[in-house]
Length: 187
Image (cartoon, rainbow, N blue to C red; front, side, top):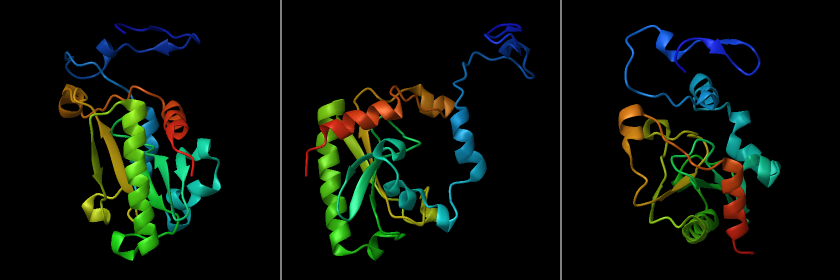
């Protein structure tokens, strides 16, 4: 918006051309929902582990796509791409070497199923799959093991992440969760 004006509620809105600093040619994509992530930091208190709490919630509220016996699959709340899921053991363990053989087997099985389902429902062209073990390695939630499965498309790269440090996500999390859950095979 250029110049000041009134919004739908009649409040004065300052136009971006009046902001301090030198105007530039860049548009801004505002993502205020990420303030919780930025302000509160990435590491929750041990009693507030989101991966321990999620299974006690409804699938819709926790963004859970599928549940297994030892592990489950949920959407990443801060996705790199639409369909970015996490595979987590129910048990609170920090690293892969602490997981039981049963947990490792099911994490692997759920990863394979997630890849098949994501390919079917989102028509992705490939995947980034990985685990960050420990805070120093970049684990967002370092105390609870989780594997990332990020669908990729031939044309999903653009200037946003490189120039603006911003990722455009074209689908709402609830819609993505529903599509993946509906495509998940019955156990």
